[in-house]
Picture 1 (cartoon, one colour):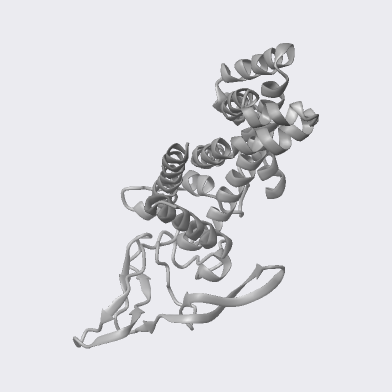
Picture 2 (cartoon, helix red, strand yellow):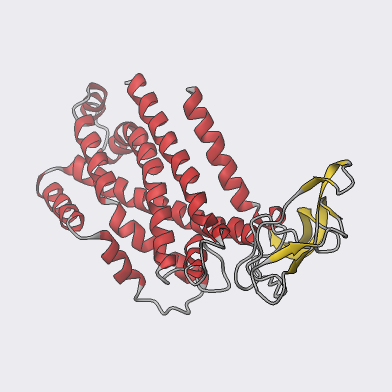
Length: 338
């Protein structure tokens, strides 16, 4: 595995691990509200106190609202709260069990808002990592379903040929001409806005799969049609192998590279599409966090003063870059092998 491909794979594994372990990694639960700290800025970590002494363990100062103006805070430098590792905090569920241990926090449940808070006093970092679980999981499920449909349609069209090939590719051409964003909105809007998060995610996954299978199906169909003329495939058919056996054992394995590359290319598109749907109010409803709903909530604030509420948009950039780097590495590797 080339270094760039290896780095992208490890970075992608890290991103998904952070999303899956959102409970212990987040200092707070995503629904926890700190009404005395609405729109608080990111908490500053200090290593040197007012006397000039350096501390190996970082500490923070409590935040108090400056005067009667909400959103303007000052640090109470008379109190220092050390940041601790593996501390008890609000309960969360992981692997079907309830836990209270958080990776980082303050024993007194102090103001540890590393990415600030929103208008309801909810910790943005906690909502960001929990929202990643919803957004990334939805995209991965959509990619899996999309490629399953694409592999089935492309394999049948490429292997059968004739009128069936023309029919399936005609349906693909029809779907390719439709504006996908409007189709997504129409499919997702069928559900009520107060649908359960699981139902909302299922509808989003189905909508993304229905509009995303066309291009991968065409690529799979091309590979399958080309593989039908390979010598080992013709030899297997000459020895009496069934069409099903030839397809599963000799033809479909040749599409693995195309499918993996398409998965890496589709994932960032689907993540952005899921965030867009949630931003437009068609994602999981409150209090379930997702990157799209967080960005939608940020519209009601003065973003020049509460810039930290754009953290989900900033997180999209490296996540999409990692996927595209993975796709580029896969394409380079497959080209070298071929």
